[in-house]
Image 1 (cartoon, helix red, strand yellow):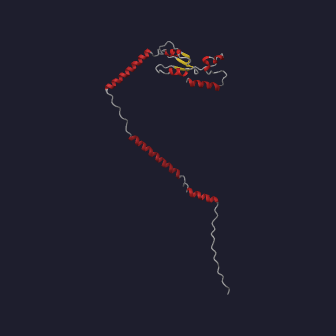
Image 2 (cartoon, rainbow, N blue to C red):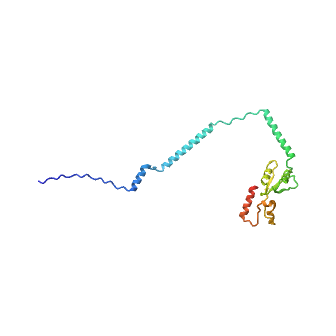
Image 3 (cartoon, rainbow, N blue to C red):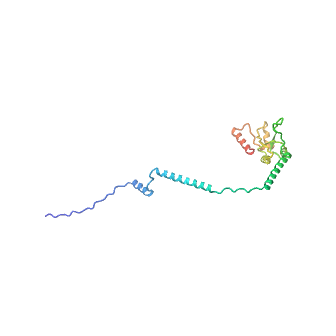
Length: 215
């Protein structure tokens, strides 16, 4: 009798499916970041939350405004204090009228005048003696200030110092004379003249620089 051979049992091999590096990377990223938004409902939900918060803040601010204490009432003024205030006002009007009569400008109503004359004082800013005398005149004169003059800033301050006697300030814009030598001598040497040979850009720059000094 032939001998029976005992069959050897061989364990079954489990073969794992091959996984590409790209698949592993995607799976790892998903594990780290977690699932993405389910859809457009996410932004809409955030918008509703923001709107609710905004309305809540508006309601709180309105409630605080309504609950704020009203402004205090001013203290009552008795008859004696009221009379003192009226006397002070009357004295102020009296002083203003007296000053106007003594130092104010001498003018004639426009409709009553037989003619009208505009006086412009030229070359202002190079000296102060004649300027002070002209400024003291009780007439509404106009003063044309040279932008390159020594006292250009000071005379403008003095012309604007007394609002009771307003004075018109004009810009005296130096332009090239027939004799160019005059631009290089004396006080004229301080001025930046407009020249016939200047380009439009140069003319514009000179005018803007002058207006920055005498606006």
